[in-house]
Length: 236
Image 1 (cartoon, rainbow, N blue to C red):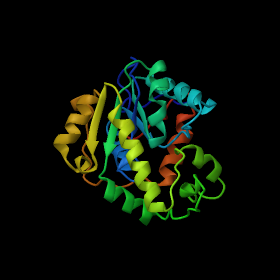
Image 2: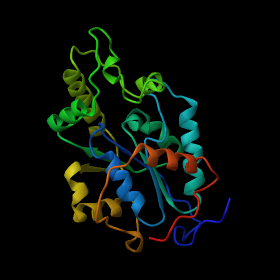
Image 3: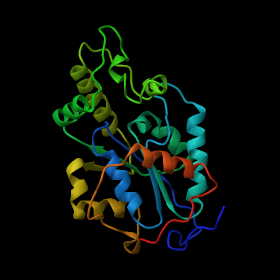
Image 4: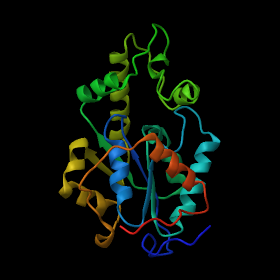
């Protein structure tokens, strides 16, 4: 493993990781990219497939890998709706772990899910609404990352899912930061977010263009997170 780049690493002190949560289709990919764009940060999007109804070895792997990066002094984090029911478990390992909740209004979220192509639902199939979420080879894993919802139509299922996630986010204890999707285009709100995550002024970068993550981005970050620590990255 080559040494960490000085431009990405200025301290060996431990920095508590953070997680971001939302409903999906809420700007979580952009949020991950914005924070990862800052210096001395290492942030992914949906790197770990945590389950809603059981604790699996994936949670332990996430904790181990986050701890490795945190020990380098870099701010480590990941963003996924699947972390909502696991915040308590994560805070057992990382005391006072910061949580960022990102919100989008119900109508826009449901419409985005409908446009995304998750249209497959069968009457009586409580998990059919997440068919096609991750493709045929990962569908079984994907279903466990969502709550079980009994609905008659995809639109109704997405609405129930939005309500379920929003109710859980309202109950997230401090330290927590709540953002609206529109805040991602407001540098003043991002300044508040960076304060919450204890990102120093010298490490803050505000993206001129905020693009959505691709699946290739997430796969590349996950590969690096499995190492002892993050590899050198270009100065920003």
